[in-house]
Amino acid sequence: MKKKSLLLLICCLVLLTGCWDQRLFKDAKLIMGATFDLTDDGQVKDTVSVLIPETGTERATEGNAHIETGIGDNLFDARNEIDKQLAYKFDPSKLEVLLIGEELAKQDIYSVLDGYYRAPRNNLSAEIAVVEGEAAEAFAVTTDQEPRISEHIVGLLDAVSDTTHSHGDNVQLICAELFEPGIDIALPLLTVDKDANKVNYKGLALFHDKHYHGTSLNAEQATLLLLMDNKKGKVARITRKVSEKGEPRMARYLSAEVTNHNRNLKITPSGGTISVDINLDLYVNVVEYPLDKLTDPNKITELEKKLSETLTKEAEEVISLLQEAHSDVLGIGRRTEAFHYDTWKQMDWEKDFKTITITPKVNVVIQEHGTIG
Image (cartoon, rainbow, N blue to C red; front, side, top):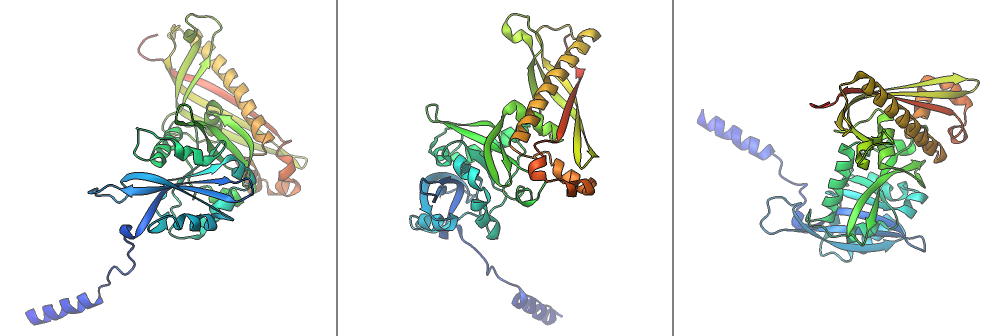
């Protein structure tokens, strides 16, 4: 019996496979962040953050970084130039963040993403953003908050996603929307403050058909857009002026946290075109209002009306900016094609999106006002 068991064990060992497809970190240089810019002569400038592993660390992705730059006719050519500067092979499989300079984003964002989608070992979970001016300047910033600037920018992008200032999309998630008619993307827009040595979030860069046309939303407008798009991060906060009186000045403002929301987007076809109604109900808790009197139902009604009017006006401005940029971030075209196909076929979305009537309405309901009134 023992001989049979031993023979079976030997047979199993022979059939077991080994680690034939291994890739050792010691034989590669991990790229943790990459930026892409357009040079004056139309070439691609690729600046990367290369990981320097710390001795004795358990994780291969721990450590500091140094910066390398390559310029080429396309992404692959620029990467080859960087390879010539590295001791080991260029490896973007652990890429954390990808930044695109403003001028390159205005031409065609897909021109630098194509190589990432084609290579199976690229990390498509990398976060992506647009940088005003030259994206490479973001990697020139030094920070004490994180050991690597790429890690710091990832934390910044995660934070603005959690607070409902951006969609939190990555390279993979935007792929389908780059090619599908009737929907566009909006990416976080970052700025570099050289004097303060900081990378800051500015708002959302509005795209249409792979192009950024220079129109963007600020942080407050971005939050309103996401709520109209029926998307909310971990928290969503609003601070708005609700009174012309009150001293100090901060007493004229109310801050609230959105606890729940309900968006209803209705498309009405008529005469070969459509009209769109967006009704957004926001249920909020008041977190700061120095003038108090929130136990008075009349005061609550007054504040709800004021906030509803203010946010509705701001929503109209957001819609105007979307139509100006021809950026259908709300996916109205996609919904029209899906539910009103006959009307969709009669329309030329490239021209008609700017002229259709989109009417937003925001209704604010105050649910709680804290432990004091």
